[in-house]
Length: 100
Image (cartoon, rainbow, N blue to C red; front, side):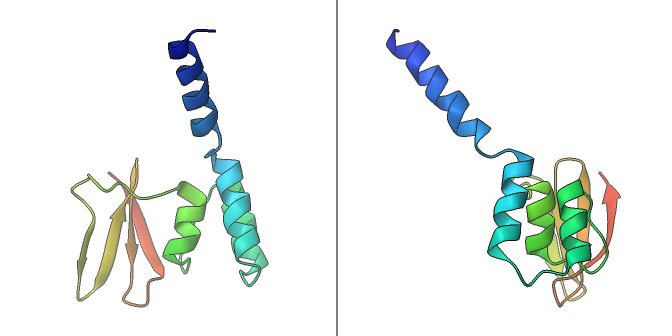
């Protein structure tokens, strides 16, 4: 096997480790205190009002750092994900979300 094929295989294996189901299980195992209703939503890839930023990240992954819609103010903060913008209150809980 030549070097370029080996590098491609390693890159594929590394990116496969961060799949949504694996990420969700990892986050859930790190937070046994999470409400079972929230855990069920996270496992299904859904978010809900009242979720924390950590729970949203467990569900959808990390927010987009290069997007223009991630802002904060006296009202709270918005984080932009691939297809959605999620709004949090000043306590860091989801209040709403909208398509980009």
